[in-house]
Image 1 (cartoon, rainbow, N blue to C red):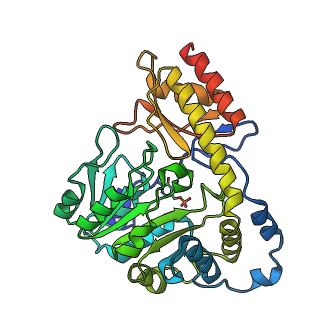
Image 2: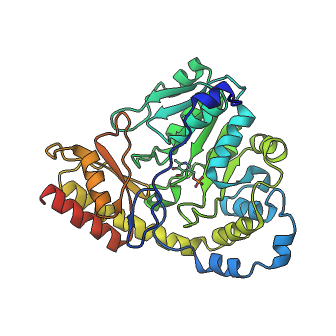
Length: 360
Ligand SMILES: Cc1ncc(COP(=O)(O)O)c(C=O)c1O
């Protein structure tokens, strides 16, 4: 006997990247920041007292929301704190999509989107990206034709790392009938010279929701803290109606606030990651791999065509050497590896192993 709803029984759930914890593992498979959280975060952790744990936390994470609002030049009513960015995705679906109505995404993208759509019993409408991972010109029209009430666009794109400019997103938001969720999980790693800032869309439009997370830029994947930015009319119903009563805990709220307050410290890790991203991309290209320009903390490298077994064989071989990268057994990704940018030492270990495998 099964008591699951039909759509739940039919879905297999999200498959996260491997989380090996053996000593000596070079872990370049789940896009964590290779550097530790800021001193301010660790001091805030040590300062948490029993009284703070005894009581319920601030229900809407108000102190955090004020800090985030100030950072982005917005009002706290434009900010919602969530249990990781993932919770914002689920909340947006619950709040803006009638059960059974379509949800839109570009393909390939973050593989959690279709899983959440299945859980909601909504069809996911997938529009393939162009060969260079850019969005097709008729993206919004196709979403409207499919009746998408919510559309996910990840920027910088995962898993390619490529960045769309704000004017592309503004045009899509202007054409869409539904809500546009811009998933900026990796935005902290964008080169400042690109002057990318989509928060302008939050001020101008009532259908743009931006996802941010502290998992990547702030080295806090274990904390589970993210937030959303949007017009008060979008944030309001999630804040007051669909959110769990205490969706973020007191430890997470305290540390997340300390993280944003020490942004300039965290930003030093972003610079280090960008420098290593350039070095790694160049070295991989020298081995004959196609690596699109990444503005994220990972690169997507196509295996050299001459190598027997392709990307899967490289992935398997690296794994036997305790080096973990991500292989996706999915259309358009089977010949590629997604490699998280590590410390210089980790990247060197990867490059040495790859040089051996590719005879470079
Ligand atoms: C594209 C994308 N969006 C959102 C998230 C959510 O991150 P988190 O729930 O850790 O904040 C991730 C995590 O890997 C991601 O890759």
